[in-house]
Length: 278
Image (cartoon, rainbow, N blue to C red):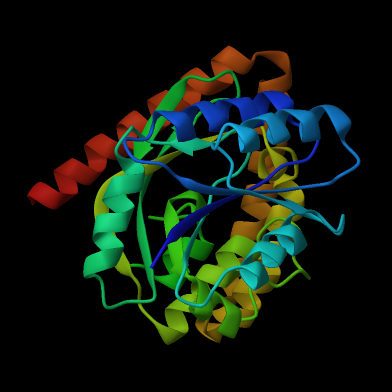
C-alpha cells in the first residue's frame, strides 16, 4: 500500500512552489506525482530539478485535455493497491504531519476512501476559516454546500477510483463533487477527525463559480431525489446572485471580501456550537 499525492499544474509556477514547500516539510518522504504539459519549459525545468532532488517521484505528461482528464491519467497510471490524494497546485498539507496522519488512517480503515477537514485560505495566502469534516457524508449536504468536504482532503483507493471510471469529464468544475457522491453510493467512506489540507482560493473553481453553479444544478438533478427539485432551482438562482456580488467585492476590495468571509464563518461556528450544546 502506498499513498500517492497527485498534483495537476499548468502555467502556475508560484502555485507549484507553494505545494513543493509543503511536500518538503512533511515528516516522512511523500510519493508525489505531478501531471503537467510538456510544452511549458520553465515549469518543466523546475519540476525536473525537484525530481532530481527526489522531491517529485514521477512527472506525467499531460494530454492537454483539461484538469479532470489529467487527474484521470494519474488514476490509470497507479497500481490498484495504491491510494490517491489529489492536491492542487497552490494548495498544501495542513501541517507537517498530514501525510503521516493519512497513512495511519488508511492502514486502519476498511473503507475505500477516507476524508478529513480543511482550512480555507485566501488567494493572498491568509487563512480564512477552519472547516472540519462532517461526522457523516451526505450527498444533499455536499451538493448544497452544507457541511461539505473538499477533495483536497479526500484520499481514495486507486482500484476503487478505476472501477468508478474516475472523474466524469463532462463536468469541467464540479466533477470532484460528482465523484464523491458516486463513491458514497458504493462505499460510505470514513471520516478522519483531522484537518488534512489547506485549500487556497484563486484557482479554477474560484474564477468559474457560475460554471460550477450550473454544473451542480445538473448534478443535483441527476444524483438527488426529486423532492429536492424546487430547492435545487431556488439554490441555483440564489447562488447566481451571490456569486455576482461576491465577485464584485473581490475585484473592488479583496481584503474586505475576505474579512466578510471570516466574519461569516465565525458566526456559523458560534451557531454550530450553540446548536450542538442544546
